[in-house]
Length: 374
Ligand code: UDP
Image (cartoon, rainbow, N blue to C red; front, side, top):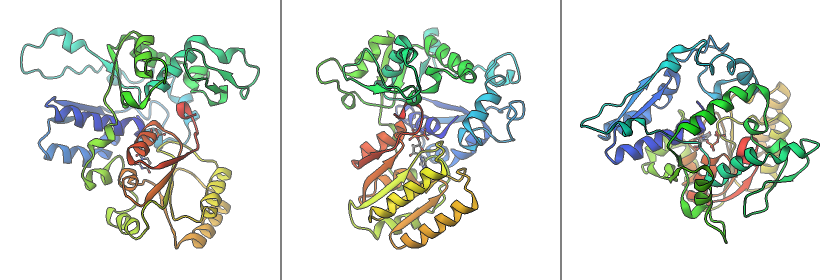
């Protein structure tokens, strides 16, 4: 229940529907409302897609009403502490959610096997999946003395060093993530295979078989690479409506972009869920100012700022307003990235953003923040 997962899932549903397969998106009311424009557009185009809404027990989980997505949570730690003990337990607060079983309508005599086939969509590329798999299996982080001591992850052709602080928390462990992590593993184990938003040629391993093949071998299951799924958004209106309602209109955004020189603008955005600390925010702002390039900078609304930081930001906006566009809230990222004036992308390396940056053919400057982004 995070935009980084929901957005590519909706793209996947469209891809399946384009092949004539009925795609059903099961989600909660708040998330359903957010994807309504996109889903309506798909339905209008005649593709077989439908939505089923399930209530989400925000209150039982100790969260405000309508708090159904990572980006509406005040902090990740709060979410984890509050919800892992309630929402994620089948037997407790939300039987409706966990007892829900969806049996898709079938036209003809499909074999029972079809109904049992489950594939999981982990939202990472195969390299990152294999990396996490090996991290989990060999547990090299257990032999380091501190969070910041580098270690090498075994079983990869490339020599990759990482620290415990940079590893996904569901693997290196924080007690409140245990239940969530077990649930994910349980789902992984019972699934028939993995669908990855990647493509074979993107993940080569020079000498040995590609990472897709290696990951497939490591888990002993089928892996389908069907990415980059974002490319199913061909029309400008599809690109502009992707995810949330943008905080800037399509025409305002295009007017600004069209006034700039080709390949010259820097786009800075750190995804849907990352929290950027005030000190980092100020450094990023100063860096963009010092770049002397025109830029678009997306600042998430939930990035609460003190009056002091707000005032500082106002000062920066005034100094750079002739060449910058600052979006507070949600940006139409695909619309922006696919515009020819964008030459660089300052990204947090979320897998969707990374793959969208690759598709747009822009240079990327990376600032990983959490999870597999490092
Ligand atoms: N996104 C967007 N506008 C924003 C922020 C994010 O359209 O202002 C989209 C972006 O195009 C991507 C997704 O949200 O498809 C973010 O996914 P990603 O894996 O990059 O990062 P996460 O949000 O999971 O950290």
